[in-house]
Image 1 (cartoon, rainbow, N blue to C red):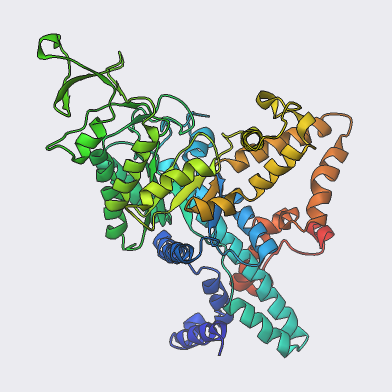
Image 2 (tube, one colour):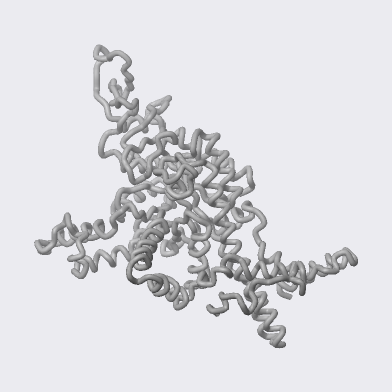
Length: 531
């Protein structure tokens, strides 16, 4: 017997135990509502998705072609539509996640209005967005299952028993829209206790994976801007521990922590690390500080002095009271950060880079894997990179190294459209196309994400619509540019009333009131024009 039928039988027995009090309750209607509400809480979601992510990590270790991907979301509807599109085009959601970008929360979800990525937005807005995303994903399940239930009713009316059984199998084997979300907790929004409290909220909302960065929380900057300030390892590890304790307290024993290092572009630290002996983590952190060797007689008023390799060093302290690292030490610091994080509780790494370059990323992961062989990366395929220019310059350099005549190209101006049809541009585009697969094999990247795709697609599509609608195209600008494409591409949202839950509401009205239900989906509903 199918699970769907088992649920009907279970409610039938429960109804019988209540005598006549539940006379109006239809067991199949109740079973349908149970099926449409598989995940009762955010913790149910976190447990379910953590298992998926852990299995994907194991599969990647066995075969790096099995990398995972996600796109950033700033609204539940956006996340829902992504997963609906993925199911439509690929029939399943295997290895496809969602990403929750702190940048987009700051820019689009704060009550202060648009903010830079500096952790100035409300802490609770992150957990609220996780909850919202999963609300929309669960609604997508309910909507799609509701359509299958209506098909069963139609098949029964036609006495098509074979079709009924087929639909029951579809329901029993239904592929949910609920997938793992990698959620950005920035630098923890405070000390380790603040990190723990916020992590709990995020996990309770459904997060199985939390990404934490090693910048100071009060001076935090976007990973692709200047002025980044890192913290000593002990401070960062305390926050990793805080997130792990939050997972364990809530029963998500296989929760995933992504440790992000911004050291490649961070030339500053707010603190000199505590060190108890030569070679410990604090000593290693301090060894990268820029400074001048001095004698005891040169120690001045209010100087801060450390001892490195038996020498007295005056670290370079800025007017901001920050200390700077020696130039050229970024990669070494990233490698140390990564190894340390993996050895002390993190599951995945995130190395924020200034460009998408497999050689650069691969060189660092190779060093990390000498110590932690199964080290894996989450990588930001960022819109902050000029992908076209970067890859054209990489190909230019490679062709030049091979001795080819590059006199027809201006390396500094390779973004120009005049190069779009050249051999160089075609090779660069192919390298962009295969970047994720290539770097998954060659640079240990388990998960590829684009942080801000919908921020940019919303701006681009709005610009195109505004230009035509408010120009001489008028209503044709909308019809040709939006609605006609929705219809011909099979975009479910063209029936926006259905997408917002109107048909589910009709189902419930019928469950609750029977023939007395006043339903919206009758013959005069204009959505029928899109059937």
